[in-house]
Length: 190
Length: 138
Image (cartoon, rainbow over the protein chains, first blue to last red):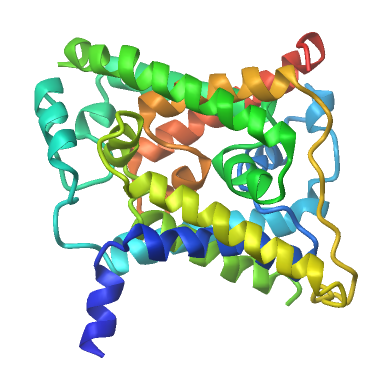
């Protein structure tokens, strides 16, 4: 029982986490011919909350047909609560030495959470960064019709050429931002 | 009842996002700087597992869904530019805020303020795309 509890609290190695994520692809097909992915829920939430007076075509559809997807996202929220609050990891994140060196060079302290506190300390600068980053994530995932789960995992697992293109785009954008934008942001934020 | 399996699948997914630390900004920066195998191991083993699972489903063609339907693998819509450019724009955001949509949802469950702000941004970005969709190349 204690080992079980210790396991639920500890972070999981890649060879446990990866296969569990990959299993989502055949699992969602087996449950009901669904394609595993999460970002389309951003569209469904827009469709639900769309005010009657504006009516954008892209959000004009019966989102109730996608309630399975919204329920999946709700499950992800609950899973986050269980993993991050109920079975929280008491230890600081075990990053590689190279990463730790880089973060100290960037002047980013390793806090307790999953995000550096400086990114959401409610200074206008951090708000602008998080909101703009979020807008890019929302815009980009819809333009590409999927995110890491829908393209990198589902798309590549089912050998779809469109997903290969999306993954190339995602990693080019990510590399560019992580190497040439993010390091400089922190000198502005502090 | 019909929706319960999706809730459970989502719960496992959200749990793994946190336990694997794929939802950590630090891990994503570490990945983009090739400083650890962790995230690459997750992606590679996830794809290998997904690929094997899908092949098995195809091979044993008599497997039906829970609703008793034959399994059909949905294909992505045709297009080229939208996948590359959309992916690139998403990647730019991911490389800054270190959060992709899966982790955003699971971190919201943890009560993360940062993830809530990112979610607000992502919803606005999605809305913006819906407004300009017809003027973009796909």
